[in-house]
Image (cartoon, rainbow over all chains, first blue to last red; front, side, top):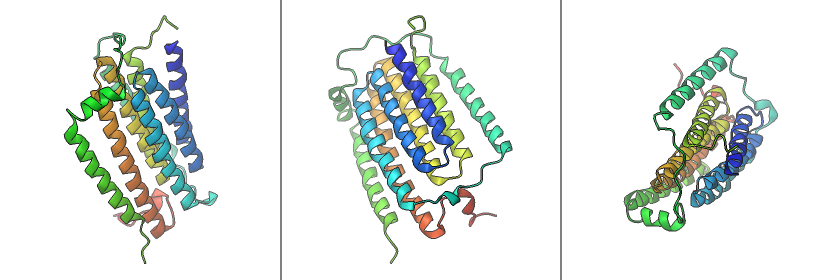
Length: 164
Length: 104
């Protein structure tokens, strides 16, 4: 049953990302990306990562994309400001480079010997386990992220100020 | 579908595909907001790789790295959108082909 779900959600994710890239309206792209993030959260649940799935919906779909939608509506771009399309030479070139990159990744991934996922223990990916690791092994990184968030807040407020 | 059970390679190929799609989107599109959104897609592909490998090796360290990547992506999105707003205030456009002040 989990196999069907993987194929369904991965198809939804790839389809929404493809559609997102080729939309004229940036608001439609943002909404499609929100849908893609939701299906990605479903994939995280399939991978026994419920904490990360909840954080994905809260942080990505619920904060970052809402910020994007705010900015898109604030800028209020009219229809006439859509940029000219990139030429077909550049498009085929970048498509070739992208596929070469993808084949490189696929070739590198087959270094892992072909085995299935091992059986998972009871509390894998639960907030208790993640909290144990976060506050013991990764405590320094945790505090540094705190400082980074503070720097981000100060920077965002400074950038958003109106020049009077 | 139990003939082809889902292995680690399925997840890794999916994340590689998402990464390459985000990369193509950044190069092709000329709207700054779409470029930032494709950047988020690339970061999510990396997150998927970390979570899938955490499941494969049964270590929650991958989840913690994913947590940090999400925090960094949030800060970067906020600052990036602040930059877009400042650019829009000065140039009245979000098209990357209009920003040629540093050219040549």
